[in-house]
Image (cartoon, rainbow, N blue to C red):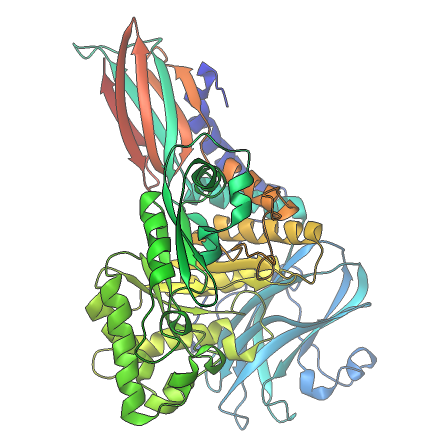
Length: 599
């Protein structure tokens, strides 16, 4: 991408545009998304977001009227909504309290019934008696609705739990307005203004110097899962990429043995051109899981994991460690399921010591306890403090690794009561406050196995998770295989944009490891490495979210300015036959980065 010298003023122009965006938001009813979220129960409700939006000065209806009779008394209070439009994104929030005399606590789910559909969950909250809890969510309709009802139900749906509500808000966004908000957050959270100053040997400003800037690495990792099939996938070897010279040791496994072959240009060329060219982060899909490394007690096998780690090192890729323990008994080795008491405790201690010692310092993250909101194999057998012990041991064995919880249906939906955003936050705080000092939590892992994304709900839940002040990663992103390839691509783009534009998200991993029979749910390419629609979306986003080649001349002040994505850069200055090369990095900071060079 070529830029003329006028780009020297681009950072001023963009800042002006962003300021104008905020002004337009207030003067022309262009809404600016409100990221405010609360996760602690409060004595009094806060004021409504957007001053209430469509619900400004609206009181919740009660049962008895003809409109609400079909809903039922147990679902009140409720709001009657008129003339909702198709493809509009509606952001909803409200404060909820359980009335005295009812249950002491309950999960409250907001639902929407329109002319043509019922949305079973558009937001949820863990509510309590005696204080106010904040529910935040939203929805989008496929068709217009003249009359809709927004109502509530509780987890112990016996009709006896009575709710009080306050400070309700419903704010509509057109698709264009939503995108404008995403772009604003991308420009402020993922980019930074840079001014390059060029001076002569005596310090005088040099006008007309040619400035070339190239981004060489990105601050925001986007990656894909890989599996052991990557080490011996024959279709890689017949790709048209043959221009990389290297040698790789290839392991091809049969049921009874492992054969070692040496391969060179074809395989390495494909891998560098297809995977390495695109991705700077990865995760091993299954090869580190306990059932893979120790299928039989005492017989450890890290062969595939070691070879995959060699690939990671050779190509300077960062990797997540997935996972140390999986609470789902279905994915626990058979021999482990048969252990009890001290035998199980001993096996667990040996597992974590073996894995963490072997790969100390190699993985940037570890999913310590996988899907603990849904399953409790170890806590049932070893006690409620088992997970705390896992985190404490992992911290001791690899003090530099970032330790994560990892679970599904936290941002994908709010219908799964086991993994609501409030349940996730509660579990993190429970571990942090555990008696005896608690455990330091480092990161929030959100799997992100979507069918149809609800972008308003996804963003609302990310807002709530941001209150933990921990880095958030989308760790296993894919779209259900129940959808056709083009629909998968449409929904994938929505999820990627929501993740990349949310300031609290620090990285995205796609769950798209390729196997001979396809992928878990969604593939980026076919078996001949021809892009599927989802692959086209990923390529488009990777290009869009990278600073292109920047080339221009310094102005009469000897400066050149641009707005660049965060990461590492190379810069060269050419003037009157002389060349100066340097580098700089852009980290998140609202201040302009000043790079001073002398030629």
